[in-house]
Length: 125
Image (tube, rainbow, N blue to C red; front, side):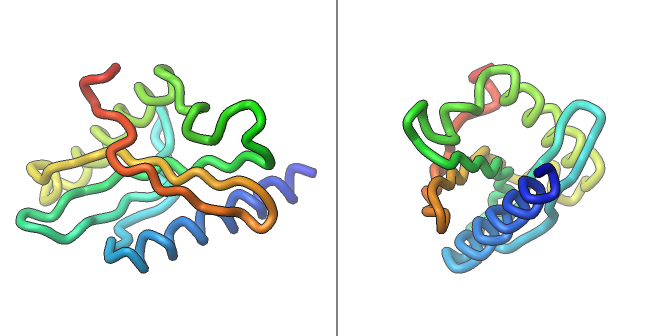
């Protein structure tokens, strides 16, 4: 059962990555773990200057109890912000770039993706 869940999670993250790349974002990293949290996807959106986009990917079989974005509560946001700060600290060339937090929620089989840009801000927590 856990192997099925891990495989489904990996497939949904791969689909989210492909969706974002098709929209013009460039992949920087995936599944970056720190003691305080994990970053599912780190992408870069072109622009002047380019924006670093930290993406949380959430899958729900059904949206009956709220979509995946609803499960990104204040505690989860704090962990994501901490992980993003640690990532930027480890990548100084990106540290001064604008950043944002997006959520890609997926539901159903096959998964339908919904990209929520600027889903929350670091100062929301």
